[in-house]
Length: 345
Ligand code: SAH
Image 1: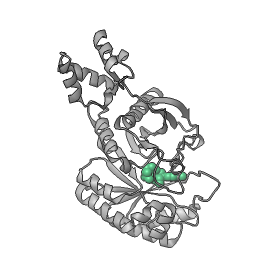
Image 2: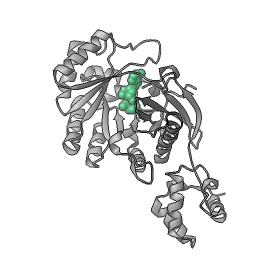
Image 3: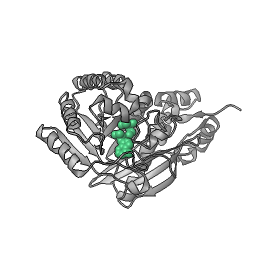
Image 4: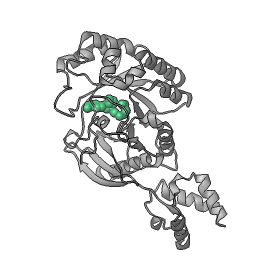
């Protein structure tokens, strides 16, 4: 038997052409496209303004590979974690984070991760595969629905900070953002989307060349090569000098401020030299620093630095006119915080 094609892999133009080839109107393609994306239909049955015969014909030709939210957990702080089942049975996680008047979706870009950051739970999962654009889009659409349901407001921000390294799944990540920002998708502004990378210089340059309009965050954690390559071993192949050059290139082309994500750990990067190195690194291009609270993933190789050490970071950065925010963890009780996504349930 022929394997039916996933209808969501067709562009709108291809869908229009399909209907013309069926002696139907091209406009039917628009209607079905709207069902598939803006209305997130899970079955052809749902498409109530399409005739029964047409729905049957679609059923015979295509499948709709839609993600299913397999399990949903709610944290005491309002954070919601979805374990999402993909069409081939693999699972990824995504998170809804409510803050003040905002709702942020944190989405996964790969099943597992190919990088080896020693402080991150996802790094312990083998990378199984890249997510398709629609699988990323669906995570966002599911969280948008949950936001409306639980908080009575639409999703306001998206961060690509779930499982995986987005820039190692470059094309699909960009396609997902195209869809999220398109008026036929969710119509969100790219300024409300942040892609977070562990820092792959070549791909940061490619983002700049592609003139993307979303925000870039780089997981820095140390501005000293020896330290960084110890906690993020893959970065041996990408020394800070190369990362710096890529970030300068990004800023030159996009004029968009970079965010550096940074966790301060006991005995790893809580020294004066570490702070000085970060301050220096922050002067290369306009940026801001998000100091992220550490979320323990095991028995304690890594420990969050003492408040004094963190305050030293803050005062030194501020003294040098560098914007710094302290990001409190959300959803820790359900393993939904940064670096904790590991398909535990
Ligand atoms: N691969 C991408 C996106 C996923 S990680 C990246 O590296 O940026 C999202 C953020 O969580 C990164 O800044 C990462 O360094 C941080 N992170 C990973 N493990 C963490 C942990 N245990 N506690 C706090 N932050 C963590």
